[in-house]
Length: 261
Image 1 (cartoon, one colour):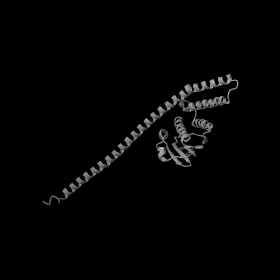
Image 2: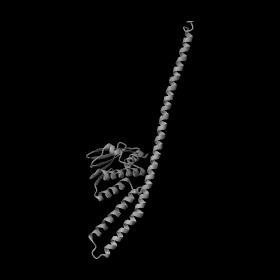
Image 3: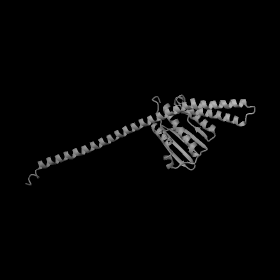
C-alpha cells in the first residue's frame, strides 16, 4: 500500500491543498484582526462622540444656570441692596449728627453693589459674547484686585487665536482657577500669561500660595472636574504643578487657523 503515498501527483495535490488551507486560515485571521481593530476604533469614536455630546449638554446647562443666576443677582439682589443703600441715605439726612458708622456702611454697600454688578455681568453669556476674552478677563482681574484679597498680573499677546465660543469656555476655566486660588491657596499674587507658539495657544496661571497634594486635587470637588471637562471640550490639555511654594496651571489648546491664512 506504500505506492499511494509515494505517488508524486498525489503528494503534489495534497501539498497544494494544505497550502490553500493554511493560506485561507492566515487570510481569515488577518481579515478578522483588521475587522476587530476597525470595530474597536468605531466603538471608540462613538464613545468619544457620546462623551463630547454629554459634556456639551452639561456645559450648556451650567451656562444657562449662570445666566439665570446673573439675572437673579441683577433683578432681585441688586434691588435689595439699592433699597438698603437708599434707606441708609434717608437715615443720614434725618439725623442731625449721623454716626460715622453709617457713612462707612453706606460706602461699603455702594462697593458691594458695584461688585455685584460686575459679577452679574461676568456670569451672563450674552454679555460675554459682546466682548473678547482679553477685555472680559481684564475686567475680572480689576474686580479681584480692587478687593485687595490678592493681586493679579496679566501678560498677553495682542492677538487671540480663538473663536468666540472657545473664548467663553476658556474664560470660565480661568475664572474657576482664580476662584480656587482665592478660596484655597492663601496666595498673595497670581500671574497669568497667554502665549501662542508652535500652532498651540498656552495659558499659564501661577500663584505663590501653599500648593496642594495630588490627592487633594483629585478630590477637591466639581470645580477641578469642570476645568478638565471644559479643556477637553476645546481639544486641549490641562495640568497642575504644585509645591509648597505655589501652584502652576498649564493649559494648552490647539490653534485653528483660518482658511485665508
